[in-house]
Length: 280
Ligand code: DHB
Ligand code: FE
Image (cartoon, rainbow, N blue to C red; front, top):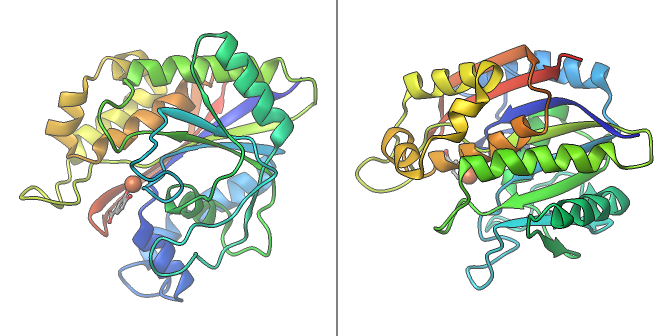
């Protein structure tokens, strides 16, 4: 049987990808960012997942505003890197796991989550920046990825509670998949950030710290945060944090915090990162 063994949350700030790709990782501004992932790289090399489920949001790269699925699962054999305006990032294409992805779709739809099936899709910084941070520079990514794309761009976006319950359903799906696979689930995006308007650059360290604390010990309390509170306290893009609740819902009730990293400044965003291991 397949099992979800751990969860990783990680911001997906595109400027990190650009810094990495353009050889700026050693510059004083960026060095602390990449240093913050040294432990994580060793952890994931040792943890050796067979497959990743990466919960992320598309930034109008694969889906224009013409079609905006709330939850979409990539069932393709591979996912090319999107061109976000400066050419595609020079990173390997993402290899999918169509069998597991289709199984998750089947199981979650029967569990009454209306998932969009995506058989052709490009993936943008929302998915590739966390891969770069966790795996560094590669000829090929070390394992296949099931992309789970969530709309956090156009309102109405799903509630934190809905996301958490989807995580629960994903866990059930994975545990009913026949192959013996170690699965790690990523929740990406966040933490507090606002990219435009008078509040651009908003950072709320206190909220972010509480969110990280409760992700481990009281995720139920996080599922009750309304959209307006994310908006007010964490800026317009802070809503990306609901994706972390999908990751958390897919883990055991009891988890161990293996690592945490919080850093400002990195572009306009508070960079948050946490690794949670299932206690059992
Ligand atoms: C930034 C962060 C994001 O999550 C994003 O999608 C785009 C930009 C930023 O911090 O600059
Ligand atoms: Fe984003």
